[in-house]
Image (cartoon, rainbow over all chains, first blue to last red; front, side, top):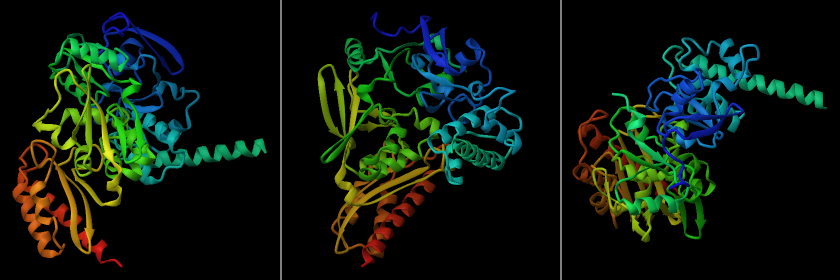
Length: 173
Length: 292
């Protein structure tokens, strides 16, 4: 079975936020735990641990996944984006700015997942309707904001990104 | 109790043949895991009994959607996101596309596969009623070869199915002719997203001059397994649709349904709501027929 990807502690490699990382982890270890414990990327949070709350949302090969439900062996060779790859404190991503400005974040546990679900939504649908925003974030639970401010935040990002694109277009013209 | 990763072995042969060889050598010993949306939940809760798991994720030979003349072939590894985004699934198997949009959340749909949904065999499975009312077939594969059976004979009991221990679900075949039928699918749960069905009803029907010439009905969470409602169908078949036929069909459904009380709902509620859903479908048919 030498061609098989082995189960145990052989190196599992993937790209996280643009950087190649190799971890010696058990194949059934959750991607969530590998990110937090092995790679010290603690932005990704654990909420329910069973795929219901979306706190652990990350993007894997351009799709949104619950990292608590991904055995790390299945991430071999994948491209993963976590909240740490979105922006930095001194250079926030427009999504992060909008959540700050619109009160889309309170206690913060759901926020990294909300940001990643928003990033996913806007990557596939840059002009979502309110219904599409609600559907895009339906797997992410928040117990503080009542969701209204989160949806407002996403709507604000769309306006902001459109304005930026227009300005860019004017420069180009 | 939290699951312990080290108590399980997970391997990824990376090819369909690799998986099938493994399963042929030790039938029943390896549990296939695709997107993990069911198995990893059990694992997290410490109730995953299977020690050896073989990964199907990333095997391209299982993740396909092919349209060929009269039907659409869906690889068992196709995710619900693949299904809902696919043009021909949307137009030719619209009930399945609709069911795909309400399975869990976007993150679940990106990982959950149609094969996993069917093999897991929950009586509440979202894709099952949609497939049952379109005469779908399932194709099974092992080192011994492939075989096709009607999906209606795939489930044999609560979480039991017709596969032998060395077999894998390979593909689901959905005939496209049902796109010409009147179609219905509605799920009732506590919330539009994420919630598992309290009850769901699917239907396809053809009427000629107000008479029901073909009708297929299937439900989720009305029996220990996803199943057609043959006796209810029989009440309607060959009959002119009208208030009396509708009422008798609803009575037949309440007789035929064998739901249970559980954490999500009660048997009485499920039967009543299923009958209401049937009424909605049949009244839609009546209205559509009345239109010039």
